[in-house]
Image 1 (spheres, rainbow, N blue to C red):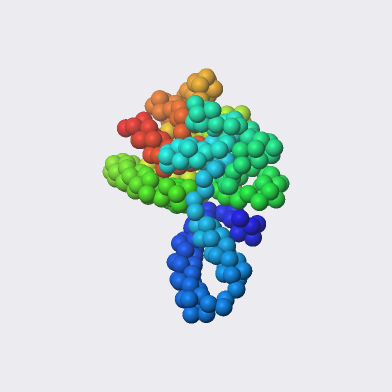
Image 2: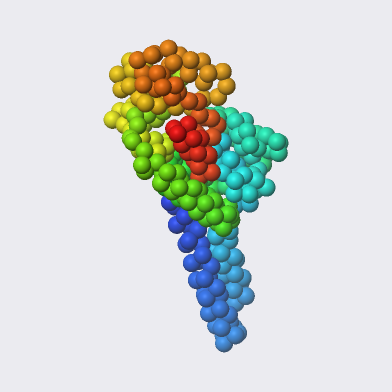
Amino acid sequence: MQPPLFFTTFAYCEARMRLGKMQMKFASALGFHYLCIFKLHFRIKMKKLFLFLLGLIAFVAQGQPAKRIVSLAPSLTQSLYFLGAQDQLAGCTSYCEVAKKDKKPIVATAVKLNIEKLLSVKPDLVIVMGLTSTKDIETIRKFGIEVALFESPKSFEEMCQQFTNLGEIVGKQVQAYKIVADSKQKIDKIVASRKSKPYSKIFFQIGIDPIFSVLSHTYMDDYITLLKGENIASRLKHGTVGREFVIAANPDYIFIAAMGVVGDVEKKTWLKYRSLNASKEKRIFIVDAEIACQPNPINFVHTMEALVKQMK
């Protein structure tokens, strides 16, 4: 596959898959036309026919799903497993926990790529997110390998669209559509269950040192707004905040996305601030960061179910 055909965004991925289907139909009709010409004009040179057929095969092949995929983002690796495409996974990062049991080749850390190891697994597609540097992406492309770049989704809806696009790329469209439909149905039920509840001020913490808050126009902000909550950091442009900011905003709930001892220590720290509504009412909860911070429809539903249970 030649460099001009590479895609870098999910929107282009989707467009390319749809174009591939159109190309197949067009190529089929074109092939029939040339066959008729061949029968009517038997003097056509075999060399030209041969070249045409080679071009036709390459043209149609562009619409085929990737068979050997390297994932450079844990969330994308997890999505491949949810789609049932783990057998197509040829390599991943050292932080892709879900792939460790299958002993998939490690070709990168969270931020550092080993290009030699990546090339050794012979991928036909590499899927990446924002942590992968532009330099690494360009290096991969120089070796004639397609790269699909996924931006962090800005909403649950955009997350579902990206998941569907990924399903189309790897040939798991049916599975992707079903997962998205089921997830949306579950989210609709959760949203409906909160309609009669009063609005609550929420602080959703995703960093400990420094303290970092979920911001507006991110998929994690949907955790708050879909639960009829008000994000106390909704007007901020940068997520780093101090404890003074949180105390002044006086949230009704504090959710801490963390794992292990770190989350427990942070919860105990917030409970010391007795002036906080969240502290007085003991509404400070730890959320599994491994699930909440890896964007895909299934994780989103699991997180929402955990949050709504804590808000009852």
